[in-house]
Image (cartoon, rainbow, N blue to C red; front, side):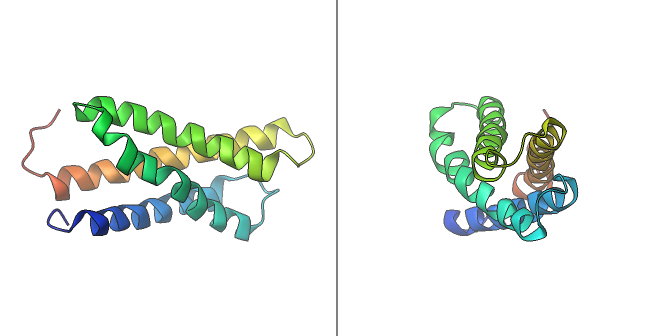
Length: 131
């Protein structure tokens, strides 16, 4: 995977991210959202934040840990805002369901981050010393 051209590496990462995050959203979003909304959200939310995480943020940082902190705070915050505006704002007030939805998005991002770090550690850069 490391020898892939950057666009293919990015596409592979996007596909894995969508698969992981969609799986979490299918299970964890509140029942007020239909399955097709959950499936759409899995692909759409990542499509909105992924270019920023892969193209915009990396050149702004000299080290990987700083980049990861900012990227992993940006992605769930932006996705929560987008999901709220697209799917929750027009719903009747239900704090419990809204909290569940936003927590589900954060968990989905944590899960995809974890999978990404495993891939980075064991596939992309297996010779790097453990941090």
